[in-house]
Image (tube, rainbow, N blue to C red; front, side):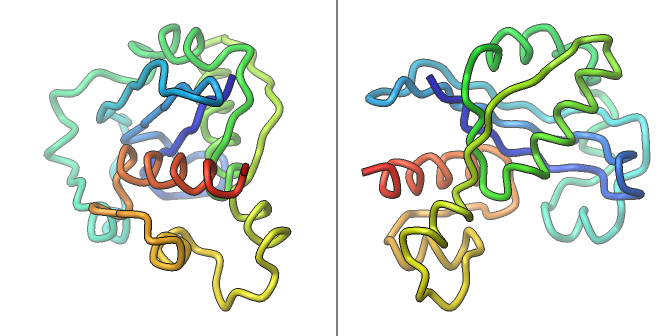
Length: 162
């Protein structure tokens, strides 16, 4: 079982970033079993660069729940799953930090679709999600929004995993 994840974060210093949006797609290797996506109140200011990149403004997050409100749900969804992401090390680190801040220990095997792409298609010019989606004709509507990026990563993972 796989948990394809994507996070959008507040920006800021290394290991001080907070999740502002998360998407999780649970995949059994054949079908999507479950999905979860939400905006999250980070209790820190979102960097201007992040606001421009994602379109998520501080004002969009004021009335949202915090990560702590979702921590148990998220932990239960991703437990005993292989975490898949595009540049998975980033999302995994952020998610692990957020869970640990809620006193939830988390560890999982990971698969990175950038690494998979480089191994299977070592002659491509770029390996960013946008480029790979164009290359493989995967629809990516709202790049730098968690669900759209997670779904594109899911589609890419299916292609690369053949």
